Image (cartoon, rainbow, N blue to C red; front, side):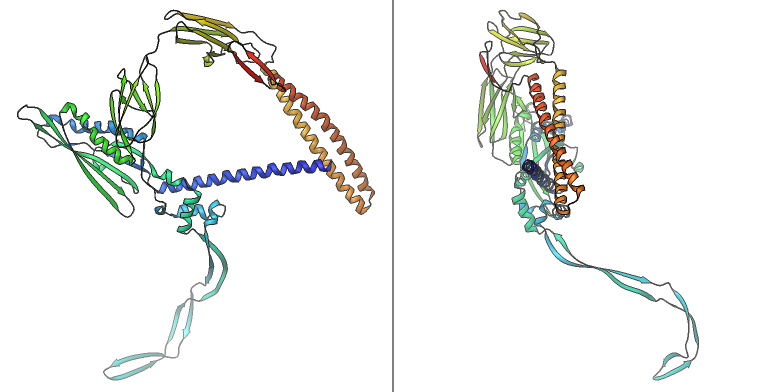
Length: 555
């Protein structure tokens, strides 16, 4: 019995220690995430692109609408950047070590406290008391008055009493509370070591910045924050009429300003682009500028794509982002593997993966297959909400309508009730004509299985019985140790009281142990019965499903 108790105690310590260690790892991960989040707040937060209205420099005021039209066109082309990230290489050495970051590290309950450096410090507090102002009377026998007249010095002596002299007496001067202590601080080199070794993924996360694109009315509406990269897009346009043809050409000058604000300085880079086009082809001619902007903002190897399809007017999605309808051209997509989705009504969706190669134009062509117009299948069942499988694929719950099924093809259907005490139903159908409707009303038969309330009852009794069994075991162990305690006292003190208690608790421990065995057998039987209600057998059984030509192994 003693060996059994020790074995159970060792198992308890093993699981308890395992839980503590697992909790410690989670705590470390949480503290690392907290520190990383605080650092990411200090570094570049985003890349902001502001698009300004364009200025009309021509005398023709009828085209003032182009001021916002060009602005809106640029926004429609550039807003896709909000679904992407700008790559700005993050330098670990430039990470600011601020007080709030240091406070996280130097806390004594912090995982990073081992990187802090302590300095020996002597702290002294002074306590000084002052008395109130008092009035005293001082009597002097002489007052010396000196005057200077020419080279002769005249000294006069005069006796007088001086009263009401105000004095301030300092009393109770004391020094107390002298403490020798250590003050923790975080050296810069230790901080950099934390970033490189404890948070290695920080560099990658801090290098990919969110992109925001927005239209603004004027540059005065800009709200500039430190450590954020800004792009402003603006410019002007002017109308020029060709003398020979009378065609009006819009000359557009686009000014792209890129600057970074930091706490110490700012860097400004300005580029100019010129576009000349008819009014009806301005959007087409903006692609060259859009290409340069995307390439500059993304700051990664990019490639262009030209997408065509059969039929045309197919919606194209890149990594789930809609970029237009075929035929289309899209510039400066990051060079890597992407998922392309092609979608059009009455055609089957097509999803493919392709790799965009950098610095070239990548051509993509896809042929979509038209959906066949088939028949309709209506399924109901009793009980309802039963699962329906079509050709081994789950398609929904009853009542259910399945349309556009292939014609002249055998379809196998299984209706599987959600409740386990019903038998599944199997059907085979063939649709011959377009829009033919086949209705299936399945009346599911009950089996000898157990209803849900019986299963819940059995599992409840099972958990209760194991709880009682465990309690009896605990009482047996407790009685055994009390018996051992009084046994040791009896052998050392030779008192009859200890011998009686020893005998009493030892018999009690044996009684509880017998009850534990009986209760364990009952609990095991209840567990087996609860498993049986769930159709879980403590053995192996091989079954064939001739309808789906499959073999299943149950255990």
